[in-house]
Figure (cartoon, rainbow, N blue to C red):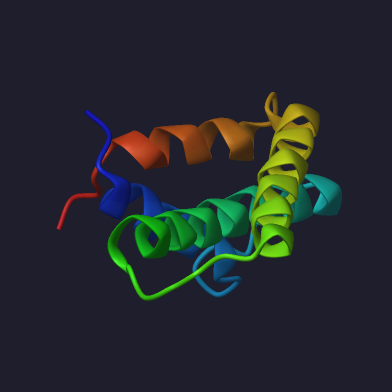
Length: 99
């Protein structure tokens, strides 16, 4: 049901201050949301490398850092999950914008 390509596009939009400047929003919430979106993009990219690039070898520190990155995104999400911008982000992960 989830279209990871759409989810990555939505996350990349969050990371672009020109597309998503969030005027008037709490800067801490915006920072937390951008941390979550960036972690989504990076972790998805790393998963693709791990799944499909047999020439890439991950050392233990890289694996630990990836897990820590995911953990920090969950901590950030817990702090912002009730904000309007976080709820809008969730919707954007599931709904394709009209062309």
